[in-house]
Image (cartoon, rainbow, N blue to C red):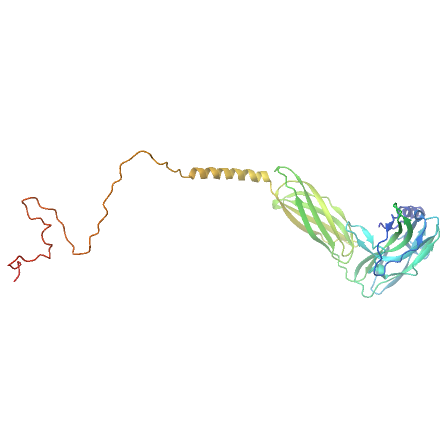
Length: 396
C-alpha cells in the first residue's frame, strides 16, 4: 500500500504529484475486533477517483512536506490537512489518523484500514469522518492532535489519511470493495529524554570454500539491525573481511540504511566477491548510524567462518601418511620359515634325582684291585661300630 505526500511548490507540481500518487486498489481485509479506521462511503466509476493529500492551513497549503511537531505530554495542537479532488465528479473521503511502522524491507508504511491505531494515530481527532469534495476543489480539513500526559518521550510516527471506498468487479466476475488511500506523514517528538540507539543483533557468515587454494569465492554476510532507542534513525553500513592476523582481504562500499522507527528491525544481506580461502575469515559489520539531529557513535559486530585451503592441507597430509606407512613396513619383523633338513637328535639328560633326606655321606672313587678296601663299603665316618670282641680304639 504505497503512500505519498505530493509536493506543494507550484499548482502544476501538486497536480503532477497527485496523479503519480494514485494507488493500486487493494482488497479490504477482514473486519477488526477493535475500533478500526472509518470506512469511506463507496463511489462509482473507480477509474475517475484522483486526489491529493498535503499539510495545509485554514487558508490553504503551507508548503510543508510533512506534519512535524515537537510537543510536551498533555499538549494539544490544531492543524489542517488539504484534500484536493482531481477528478471530474464529487468524491466522499474518510479522513482519519493512523500509526506508521517500518516494513521488513525497510519501507515506511501505515497500518491497514482494519487495524486500529494505538499511538499517534489514536491521538488525532477529525471534526467529522466523511468529507465530500467537489471536482477540482480542495477542502482544508481541521484536526486536533492531543498528546496524552503519560506519552513516552521520543518519536511517534503516523499519518493523516484520506480514503475512498469503491465497489468493483474482478476479472472472474466477483464483486469486491476497494479501498484507496493517500496520506500525509506525521512526525511527532514528545519532549523528554532522547535515547538514540542502534543494535546489531545477529551476524551470519557463509562461505563456499573453493578447491583451488589460490581461487576466489563469494562470502555472504547477513545481519539484523534494530532501532533500540526512542527516536528514528538512519545511516550507512559496510562490511570488512579480514584474514588471520587482521589482514584485510576485502570491504564493501557503504550502503544507505532505511529510516527505522523506534522498535523497528531490518535485515541486510551483503555479498563480498573475490575472497580467498585464508583459513579463517572474519567479517565485521560497521554501522554509522544517524538521527535527524546528529550522528551517533559507530556500531560494530563481527562473526567468523573457517575457510581452509583444502588442497594445501590435503597434499602434506597425504605425503605424511605415505611416509608413515613406509616406516611401519620397514620396522615390521620377518617370520622364519620352518626347516626340513634333519639335524642332530636332541640330547636327553636323565632327570635329576633328589636324594631322600638323611645323614650326609661322602662318596669316594673305588680303589684299584689289590689296593685298599673299597671306601664305599667302609662305615660312614662317625657311625663306625667297634669290631667284635674288642673295644674301639681310644675306648677305655
